[in-house]
Amino acid sequence: MNHVFHARARAIRWGCELEVFGRAIELGQLIHADKHGFMAIPREDENSLLDAARFMDSNECKTVIAAARNASGKTADEALRDMDAAGQAFSAAAWE
Image 1 (cartoon, rainbow, N blue to C red):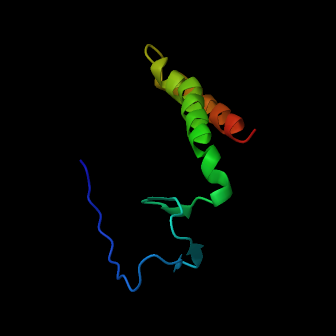
Image 2: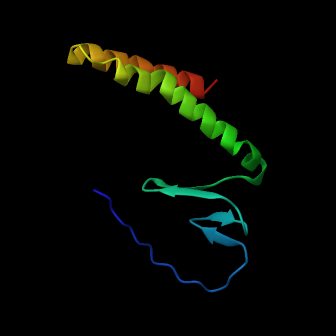
């Protein structure tokens, strides 16, 4: 099921810097937001954002998704053990 969420906002001025939960946001700055919160992408990281997203997608395909696809025919305990190991491998690669 898809959920639609609404935010209540009041625009006072357009085209200027603003502050959201104590964080200064510059005009045109990239923002990622989801149900967990938001983050403003630092300007110096914008050019490497696509490479980072591609790396994380590849990392997930090689670890977590591969473990899930190979779970067929395994017991639940085996599959969970493999998924746990895949999650650890995912995290290790992400923090290298």
